[in-house]
Length: 195
Length: 195
DNA sequence: CGTCTATTTGAATGTACTCAAAAGCGGTGG
DNA sequence: CCACCGCTTTTGAGTACATTCAAATAGACG
Image (cartoon, helix red, strand yellow):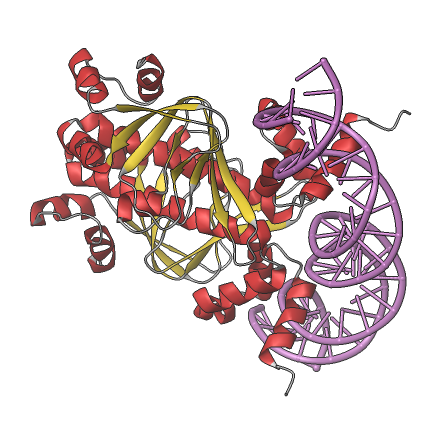
């Protein structure tokens, strides 16, 4: 049950068996159906989630009512609305399960407790955010000057699985293009012009 | 000399006078001329910089030789190439001073030392990255579906100073548009159509 | 099987780019 | 102090990439 999350933590820091146990005791298992929201815009959350199985999207609805996906969190990824979780405000980034999803959640109080009482955790969460920062940085670079087509091909290469796992409209909302244009790109690349 | 950086640290954590002193002793002051590079692509860096006065841009040159600016770090901001600094690789994001700039630098070894020996620092750097993550997240949202014009206006509102402090071509490379198009947007908005 | 939503397709449109050239601006040396 | 040089910014015409809108088709779910 906890092997995945412990392996995830072990990628950055080493825990003693006791530390590992006190960590897992703080986790709460949760199961949500496809389409359900873990977090709704305007609510406050005290949960940081770890995806054990399934897929969660972090999105945002703009002034024109269009949705933009910031992230897809599949097995082994963490998710929350940082602004709400850490700063105590209302969430602006709702989280929705795109499949039946199993999660483990950690409350902010418990995270703070871990960080102050178990030094490896402060370090773990620093590294987690540091890595997340680098990922966002690369994504931003992609947005800055790659064309929609190049972004699509890049996504195809980086996350070949997600392309078939997640609805096209969600991929489009992640790449920053319209579903119609994504459809056109797909046609172009899955049925390549025979040469 | 150290008041700015101590105030910056104090925004997130509280230090005892001794901790503050042991911190400032690890810092190295540095001065670079406008146009100079703090870090060149391909090099490795062991420095995390804090800008005391001046302005540094974090950029990247793409396959077509075009530059894209990821960040402008002015007074009170930190900068480095995280991938090189933390993961030990070669830098892909050069850092260039856009003005005569005064910096304080902290080596990775000293940062690690601080993080393990002085608990508030592990926390400080966690919060620093967490905040950086949230900023990047908002920037990404802006790129995802705002038009160039909306991004320009947003930048104008958020960083009114930078608009006049930094060369237009750098602003354009930050917003993800051509200098020509930025020029057109400026004309449109600084000399509004008299109604 | 029927309904609802997602995806595909195409035509018309618009946003932002490329390319070329002129104008502006700052520094340097005569 | 002025003239020249290099670089940045402006301007405009033509173009390309991606969007909007509308409609048809395909798929999923009860």
